[in-house]
Image (cartoon, rainbow, N blue to C red):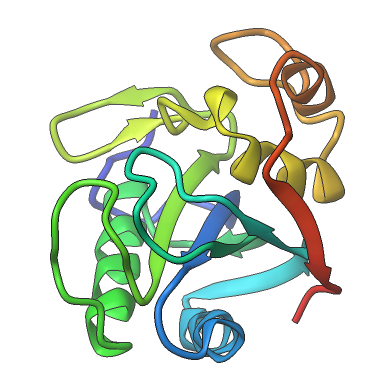
Length: 171
């Protein structure tokens, strides 16, 4: 496996989740997409879905989207890039699962599995979250989870999607 802090030898395909429930939610998603470049080349975006909050219910609904990208950043450098974007766009730390201006998460990085204090790949809870699987299914229904062995379509079929509704075509 290449180094976690040095670029891979060739661009890696990654899937990223974007979420927002404060301010102008659509503009937040668009700003995050723009800010990803040029370090992440966006190759496709799911539709945008409005979703009920997960983990802490007493907050506004979220807009969620997933993108497929390509990057030469290592997984940990990609994580740093995402955290820098969140801060630049105005995200202020609150409590776990609380409201947020923008949230950017790595779902998959190539077919890597990784378990470090900073980053777990694939995202450890993606298979439990309809707000991730519904938009991910737009882009990659046949993508196989390298640990669970199931496709995104199969994972989605096993969860409740109540509370996830189409909001807009991808930005």
